[in-house]
Length: 449
Image 1 (cartoon, helix red, strand yellow):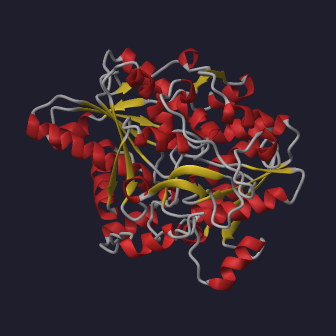
Image 2 (cartoon, helix red, strand yellow; image 1 turned 180 degrees about the vertical axis):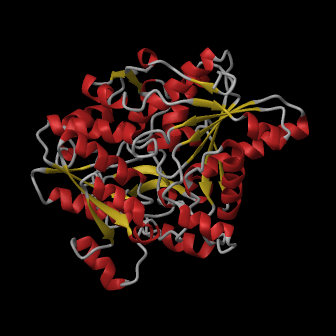
């Protein structure tokens, strides 16, 4: 395929440093607070569940952080990833816009998640940790951490949101094939899970509940740490390899995006693609950044900016973020990776300061966009990624009306090969739109600490 359709980087052109946006942000978010004392946390407060290498990155203000050679060696299994020009989609839409997408589905786990999973497993390994616990929604993150743990010889226990555990059995199979133990959450293994099941034996689960279980599990064993797949600064940092590669690829193609679009759950996928372009925006270059979330989990578009727990029970530090409330119980939409009540504090600050836009879209609309994309470009996208596709199509159609020749970039963060039950439901007309009511939102926000 010629560069008219696909822009590749050589292995030698792969970035060897992550970009830390904290060095350039005009305003940083308020610091995390200790859940008991409500005072700003220090490194010692995080040492119970994180290795010092990651804690240092969490708090670093250095612009560039070297990627360890052992991590680069694993990245080379699939990186650099391709940047595609969606010419068939452009033709179908009859748009003068140029549509590009950065495709992370070529990783072994099928998504962008290994970019941070590999790094986190490495830093835990060199710290002497033997086992990691984590949560997962749709299973993308759990698959990635299971893979990374297998690379570095670590045990892995994954608490998977129950509704996704039941909807996506083959994602569970993939995690188990990599050697992980996968537990539907809420479970009877932890005090947090037992408390929630006592109140609601049929609870569908949430990422907040699964985080509570994974953190409790990790804190109970000295050989175990907790690993988070999004939200935290160091996770967003590791994902910037995506945007850094994309910038190099646009330079090779002698063009630059007018708008960069990504889906938003916890924020690491969006941040990884967008943060390197925001560095240019801080320096005066015109580029729009659009975050897309589901109407069923509208954190940026309807949430409140406040301190809140990252988990349901209240074991994690308080983060200053847009939140729907840590007791938020999301509807069982198929984009399980986007069903989180909060968001990365760095991204929240950038949204508050006007560097990022946000839009919420409905479930049936994103599946319609996903099917259109698949029929034109051949890749079946993950439901999470389809949110970005939907808004990229909207931008392209607006260009058709206005005649503008914009350059549009979106993140295709993973494939949908394990989401075929969701596509079955959509194609059979059984998929419904779900909105989060004002009454439910008010009840959830009333529990803010």
